[in-house]
Image 1 (cartoon, rainbow, N blue to C red):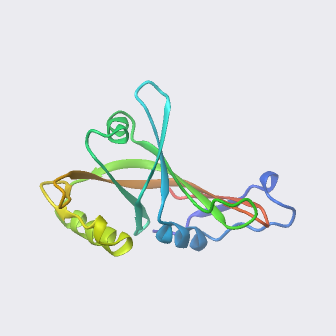
Image 2 (cartoon, rainbow, N blue to C red):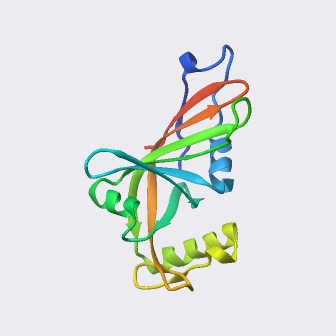
Length: 168
């Protein structure tokens, strides 16, 4: 992934604030345990849900069951916002990633991401690979989605700074 265009929003930042480096956002995205996924329902209403995700090679990955609300929303509108950060007012960094989610069915990619889930989240999140899906020992199947980011925002707290990264 190439280095994104980085812009500080001075109107939403403290005097003298500097933009947050993209590397700080990537570190947060790689290490965060919980993310919030925003999708749009077919009738236009928003839907937000917490989930586990993997950031790898400049893309975000998450799983869902085929019958779950987020999968049904994505079948109609693949636009998403993925959010993570720190639930604190005066410290840390929050990041939102805007992008487009697409299903992943390639067996090699599914295997790599199954290994990534197990490494990051432990044995409860160990997946096998079925025919275009991830499988779980308890008998379920999960769709894997890849989010291609278009834009991201960083909200540094303490020394407040709002940074925009254009990724396309």
